[in-house]
Each structure stands twice: as structure tokens, then as C-alpha cells.
Length: 125
Image (cartoon, rainbow, N blue to C red; front, side, top):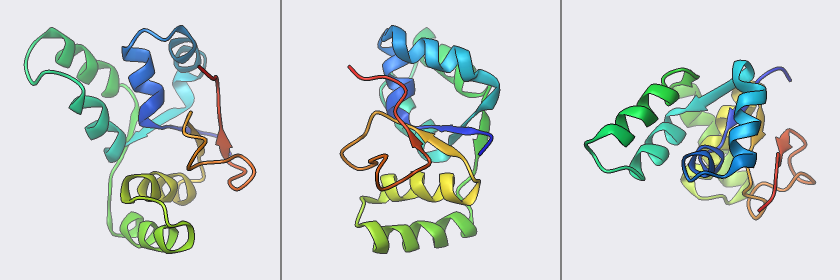
């Protein structure tokens, strides 16, 4: 697998000043992509006006953006049935599977490395 799908928690950690998240993103910047789910979840944490929101959009817009299309919707339904994950997590899984990406996350409750070989946990808090 070549690329890395950043789960929302990694970017949220970055915006919250977690140095490990910032370092991971910086070290892997050219390999990273984000999904429509991540884009929406990250922006939810910002006031809908102001400089912080614009700074977040500027950073997010630098990553490859993966759209939620029919193929992803079908894969999401499949993964949701197989794993019983909540819809956003099943969708992240579908993006990673469909695009042959590693999924970088701290969400080890839903995405265990034992169950999903393509999941990486770049740091722990």
C-alpha cells in the first residue's frame, strides 16, 4: 500500500496541538489523503467563521480529497454488514479498502491492527 488515509482523529489532534500528530502528518504529508467524512468531521470542530476555520480549510485542501461516490457507498454497506461499525467508521474503512490505502488512526476500539492489517496507529496519547 502506497498511500495513507488520515482518519479524523489524527487531524483533530494536530489542530489541538498534539505534537505527535503534527509530526506524523509532516513526515508523511505527500502520501496522505483525506475523505469527505474526515473533511466534514474536522471542520465541525471550528466556529463557522474566522481565521481558524480558514486555516483548517487551507490545510485540508492540500491533501488528496476522496469523494463519496456510488462505489464507496456500496463498499460502506458491505463493511457495515461485515463489521457492524457505525456509518462514519464503515465509510472510512470503505475508502481505505477501495483506494488500497493504509488507515492512520488512534481509534483502536473500532480499528484494531489485528483485525485490519492496513490500519496503522502512528502514536498513542
